[in-house]
Picture (spheres, rainbow over the protein chains, first blue to last red):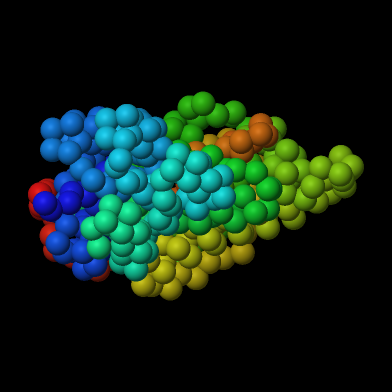
Length: 125
Length: 219
């Protein structure tokens, strides 16, 4: 079954950049996108997702709060929080929730390493 | 609306790209500031809008003290404008104390105030402008920092005025320290010809970063 990656960022350009990187490193993965937390939760409930890439700094609910709510719905979901804000405290908060941290702008290499790891843990290399 | 104003109007995606660039720039600036003060710098979601100078003054006045201090630097190159680090004058010494250390006496801190403000602003504004310029693949010449005191109107009326018409691009983002009573804004002002140039640079940036695939799902 094709695994699904849910991409959540209020910036359309940021989502386009992530999709471009995703297609270059794991073109076999399907992707869904949402521009805010509420839409993301609705998409997750309707379509499901195996991996989530969440922007940290969004209007309304931020990426960390969204990650916590996603885990309640899908406990096994793998999450990476994405932010240009690379302060130690932000990275630590992301990791404390069990999420990985990817700095913005997201490079294909960093995304590829996260996805390789996530797929290996699922036994889906 | 003049032809220049019309050609300077950003599309939704260009506006989005500019907001992302500001986010990248300010996040890099915050990383530098965090190293200087050794505590987290909290950032708001950036706000990017084309407004009149009067509107910019009003926005600045909301939720802010009337007496302000700003470090400002002009930038020139593919785009021309002015960047400002702004905060309430009453918090100026607290910012300096955060940067130079709490062990100094009040007299020492007051003596260092102008110099520390200028240097702090220089580091933050250069980090922000440098990130934006690099992302746009253009070079910007950045002037030395100057510290100015006054209200919002004073700060946006500095000579030489960087705009010839009343419309300016106003970008601001709130920042605050986690444990200290210091909060402020980073603001950027561009004139209309620069906005036209910026629009072209943003279109190039969008192509480079996002490719040409703005479709909405692939599941």
